[in-house]
Image 1 (cartoon, rainbow, N blue to C red):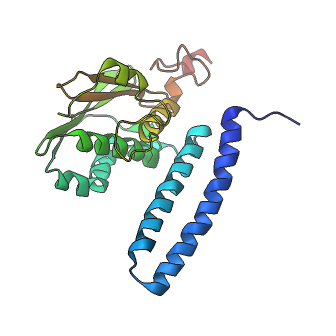
Image 2: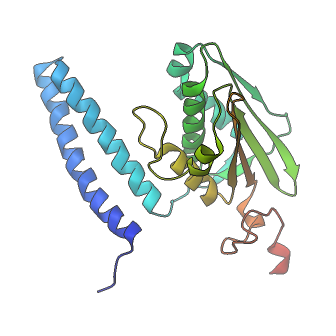
Length: 237
């Protein structure tokens, strides 16, 4: 019998927990429909939904992503992400600004998974922004089939030791956070042959920077050295 890796073993265990939680969640929802509003039931539902989301995201982190690739407009994906986070934005009275040139090229990507990236980054930026703060998202075409996308907030910033740990699974500074959001962001960007970097200093806010190709044909999937390059390798074949 083949041995399971730690990641594979974790995925199997979490998958079983997720299935059980799905049954519990369904039962609680049925019970709520019968008894109506109930504070205890609401608290139980909230906790089970949180655990269900944690198991789902943990499985996603443990397995290769199945990407549905199409040419997509990154600014449009970001606008849709802003709408999802709108209640948080309005609660903190935060202003969101988009700065993309008119000729920003379409990018071959999985729209829903990239949307999850921007939802996580925008939600994080809103959480750490002061009331009435500003968040700016922008992008530029770098040439050589590469684009750069960034999000800048006016939050408290981070120390170097926090920057070193920020993409680790289950690492979080956020009260009530589960530490999977930025790990998922990192995984999705990497699976799109991109890199994500962070610039931050205490008291000076934080900027996340994504650099990725516009088209997977311009990267060599199995080459670690060339994975993030925009050079066109189709001419070599």
